[in-house]
Length: 265
Ligand code: DGL
Image (cartoon, rainbow, N blue to C red; front, side, top):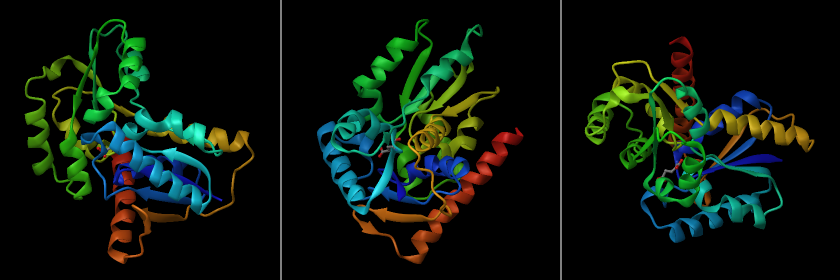
């Protein structure tokens, strides 16, 4: 059986990309709810309904595990989804814990970038209250990056001015670690780095989620001998159009390139 990956859009591919690295012999279903993206700008109630409809659809396709590859959807629905479905469900949340640890003894701070809805949610406030004992965690919503990604607009000349404007009131010198708390944001890692005149660590929860997935499949004896095949779905229909499929494949190549760059630097 396949593993399901779900996001409001193409952000979830940044998590799928990591899963392909640790689980190259699995097959996947990737579901993007592109009719309803962005989730981060909608009400919790509305988004909940979209999430349950999408997961019902994926469950009917037959999946052995589900990754909610969306911080926003995780914060709103992961607990209730786990009550409804039998298969293991993994979520993703802003990687605040390693970020805070990375700043210990440095007098530097953490900046969490996410969607408006993630930052408003109780789950995020509880996470920060639990971990941020020295008041070093700041946050900022960047809905424009979700839009850029959905339009396949990754050019720095478009993205950097937007980021500069959003961060204009922040003293960037004080940050050591940037948390990408939205799965759409890793596409812009190079643009984000450009804003800082010093070295910053940029972290996301996607590798942690991929490793957890592997651990759970191993523990439940569900490892496959597949080929890394991916079926793509968009809000309830299978993507068969060659251009869209080729764009999705290009995104995985782009993520390979970004990974190569970050391991070199
Ligand atoms: N990719 C999603 C996340 O990680 C949400 C983007 C959106 O739909 O606003 O939060």
